[in-house]
Length: 225
Image 1 (cartoon, rainbow, N blue to C red):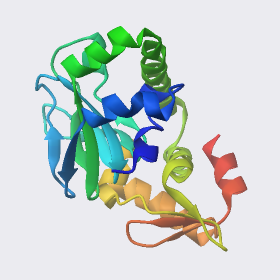
Image 2: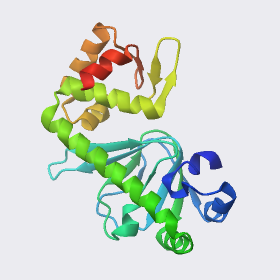
Image 3: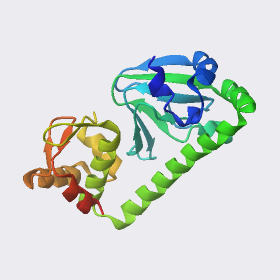
């Protein structure tokens, strides 16, 4: 396990690495391959997860079977902490977008940890607040932004977490299918593909399967506004 990646999670913010060792030692490693479901919406939640490597998608499915992606998470990010503050059924389904390694912490171990480190609660609450803010921004985008604007914003967001600088720009290996990218944007696959094709024709991006190279960041940023 790469401790440095796990220690980047909000749970450990402000802690000396040596002070965090006992909690790290109590975690269980979980490995998933692409398509594996970690937990389903409606299941009882009693675990917090931190991503060591790979990617996890969080989504919901409507009564008619349609799926909506709420977030794509990567190394150093955590999820499942909502069960600590509001025990009950999972509100989302979590599944692997790529081969993924997670560190799992039980609810009882986390509660015991916070009882001896009460100051850490504010970092967990901060993580929840950031997620809520992101959800609110996504809702506002659905109302006020057109599909190309949402596609540009999604690509920029993915680049901040999964992008690698190259001589041409930023290569983003998002590992999403066309359908998954459309679900993340909240539009049809055809409409999202049309926006990506337009960006490529303008020289803003280059598509490479389940990756995209961002060639003109300033124009994408203007289009995302």
